[in-house]
Length: 251
Image (cartoon, rainbow, N blue to C red):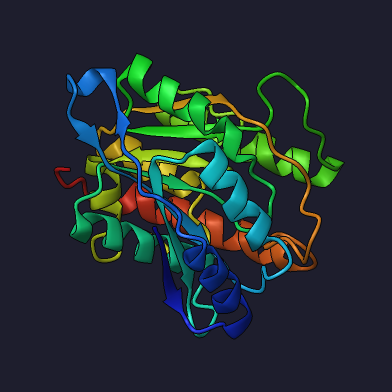
């Protein structure tokens, strides 16, 4: 099942072609649930990803056939975090048990979803972050490498967890985690990165990291391109300060 949220006509026409081909809805039976059906949703934020989204959806249906897909395409660019929170709210309202988050630009390889599922099952995690750096196969430029290292250091100091890829958007969340993030202002509208790792740790959610495969964005611009990294660093520091000063609420 492919569900569309938004009005981008080009993306809408691509989605309609998939619907007309009649994708089946399958269920994934997880050993932890003793035979109970676990409902999975893939949340796919899309804004000007017309060139890549068709391929991404095909790969998701091939690699995660038991999951429904929610393409979130707001009429206006409200922010990456806003799109994800829309997906979390949809999942919470519709009774899903787990949510995958992937980017629609093709950077995240859906076949790596199995690594996320295995890590959640084996480590009884609430959130699994997919890291492109475990195994050492992914390369970034020097400036980005320093930035990722710095925010990884902050995450490690605050949480005690070695998070090698704190900016990764390739994740798997269980119902407790995404339901919490769906509420109010628990999730930022723009950059949900190390600040959310800190928030989830503060609320005593269990976070783990596992290896996934990613490739460079081949279509369009990254949300960290141009002058955006400067704004990102400033906003992330402010977000980290807010995490530190805000009180703790029960999950």
